[in-house]
Image (tube, rainbow, N blue to C red; front, top):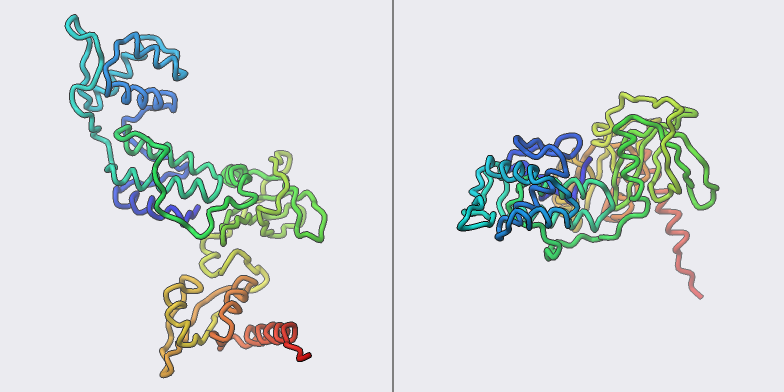
Length: 357
């Protein structure tokens, strides 16, 4: 999955030499083996910054949903000591448990600054869409900082994106993601557009794609082997379909999308070489924000305009992007695209013609 708004997280992971596994968990040596144990250790680490008796610790454990045997508390304390924690063990003179020195775990990979940035990433993702990866990132943050810093809910957000509204249909992301991962069919009730009635489709889901704050599912319609591109905001309901066999594909969608602007892949045609001339006023913008990653600068003209070239599928999204520049762009190649856009411009001129009264 590509999550563009978590780029800060990716940069930190690369800098620290940490790698996300397929299940969005990190590989840590000598870490608690269950989430329950993990939560207990987190609680105990917080409590040991204060002074508590064994009875108090067990009671606080219980208040937080951990009804434990005293031996379990001893094991948790031993675990922290194995990680390098200096812990005072009660005696006649001092009956409290507490850290005697500041606890800095040997396996802590993140600085306090890193943790703050990670928390900022989580906030951004939480505001952008509802997806289980947000919870995974919280667990990664706990593991990677290994209890060194407290999680706070009052972290001030200092990054704002154009649209923080959770896209309609994003509540289905979890179920679709799991179905893709497990190669299971889905029964999707879907309304193609406002003029059509909702229908049930059996889909073999392959790929999730985000484009302009909307999510799309690429999957094969089992009935006729037709590759569908389904906007999640048009889905009414989803449920697993275990009776039908999942149809596998050998298509590499990551590779296909290297030549796609947007989400629509015209399977009936191949990608083509596109040549455009950009006027001087828009040249720098197109260079700094290319149509697609393989865009190349061909030439700089005497009038300040530029010629660019890239390879892409000619789809609706590409045409809309070009049209959005108006007269700032001239299509040089291919000729059929130039003709098609000329027709659209002509129709728009007729529709918006000013009539003198």
